[in-house]
Amino acid sequence: MLGGGNERVDRIARGGKLAAMDFDLSNTACSILFGIIGIGLTRYGRATGDIQRVIIGVLLMVYSFFTPTTAWTVGVGAALCVAAYLW
Image 1: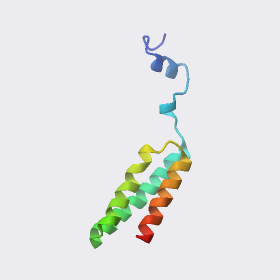
Image 2 (image 1 turned 45 degrees about the horizontal axis):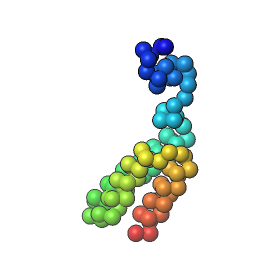
Image 3 (image 1 turned 90 degrees about the vertical axis):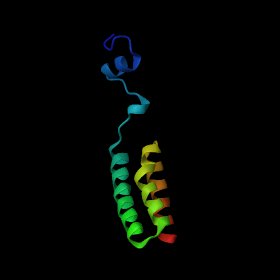
Image 4 (image 1 turned 135 degrees about the vertical axis):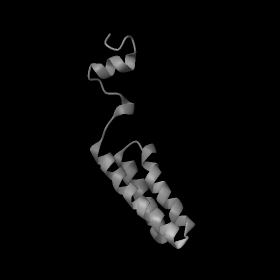
């Protein structure tokens, strides 16, 4: 009992993996990339007064916090980028 009885702390201390604490470098890299695109799109939308691009830019910056895998991150990010291009 390393964590004083707390199962999560004990599991982490033993080197166990928890689903909420998975770290994937490719998911992080994609999140950063789409976040940078979102920043640019938001700035462009604010400069031109285009509210749709501002909204899509903010979504690009935020959505990756809610996607569980790299495939979802890339899929949703690509869909938002296409929406910004076509809109």
